[in-house]
Each structure stands twice: as structure tokens, then as C-alpha cells.
Length: 158
Image 1: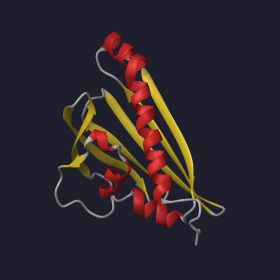
Image 2: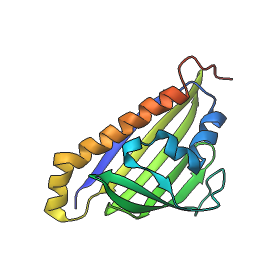
Image 3: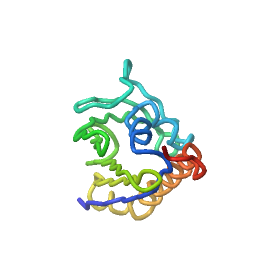
Image 4: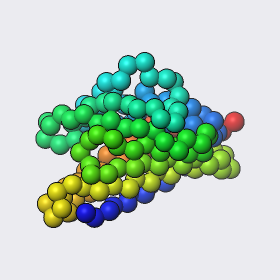
């Protein structure tokens, strides 16, 4: 199985604690997920802030109207600088998304590192080449645009 890495960085014109408060609230994931993915949280009683060991169940429509359940576990929480979510159930053979935050002049630098593997050997490699890689890039492009709307450059870091 091939390992893949998706890496994205962006600057947020808000203080570190504001960025952390937003991204560490599991309910905010819906705000930055493309609407066509029909993202729905299935877990009840979610806390306002993630913590080590938190399991979150949700459903998504990643492709062609196919709804599937995804279960993530939050690991490696070091507030306000980083956390990781690992897929425990979902479409990937492996998925680990590390979120990194660092205070910077006038705001916060944010970095996403997604390490993933597809199932199905050669078929998975073809799927990655034909559409999975593009789909993931499109999802993260949407996410970047949504975050920029939530935290526009005109926002003053305080």
C-alpha cells in the first residue's frame, strides 16, 4: 500500500487562542466541510473542546451519493499547539490528520499534515491517481476558502 501526504499551511489573522478555540471544537468541522459531502455528526454530547481519547462518529458522502460512517479518535492533544485525529472506521486503510498551530506576528500559523493510505492495493493506487488525490485537494481548497471567510484578513489580532 502506498503512503500519501497532504500538507497545507495558512496564516490566520487571529491570536493563537482564538484559532485553537475554533479548531478544537468538534462542532466547527461542519462549517469548513464542503456542503456536497453532507457532513453530519452522529455522536451525541460532544464537548466544546476536544480531548485525548475523544471518539467522534459522523457520516459523510465522499463520492457519488455514497453515504458512509467515519469514526475518528483524537490523539496527541497539546493545547494550544497541536492535536491529531486518527480514522478508526472509514474509507481509508489509514488516515492521520495532525493540526499544528503557532503564534506568529499578527496572528497564527496553521498547518495540516494528513498521512493516509488507500485500501485495495493496485486498485487503490489507481483510484488515488484518477480521483482521490484531486478530491482531497478540492476538499482542502474549500476548507481554506471557508476559513478565510470565517477569519478574514481584516480581522485584527489581539
